[in-house]
Image (cartoon, rainbow, N blue to C red; front, side):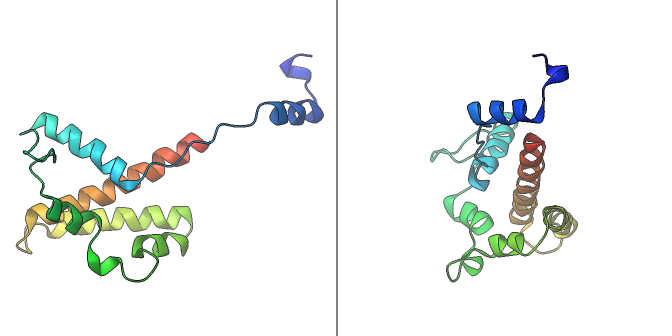
Length: 135
């Protein structure tokens, strides 16, 4: 048998013998750590607690897990994702990147807004990378 004359039954038999690899989707914290670590190498490095770009744990939590988005049993971002198609959710993430970049200079917390933009960008990048790996 060659690949050119394999039947559907041949392909089904091969799929059963060699199931596809399950690639776990990386957590947003893992995605953010990659981007913060890369930025840390380029700029000032790490603080005494090992946080990239001298980001405190409080600042990290304010960006990555704000209390006002974690009430109840479901985190807000997860509920939003479940309510949308994958394409719509990527648009939502892109819009939030743009929103935080647009206004970072006007609210009095430029670093936090830039970190939020980076969080949404990392999440968007993770969605795009993960979607491309499934193809």
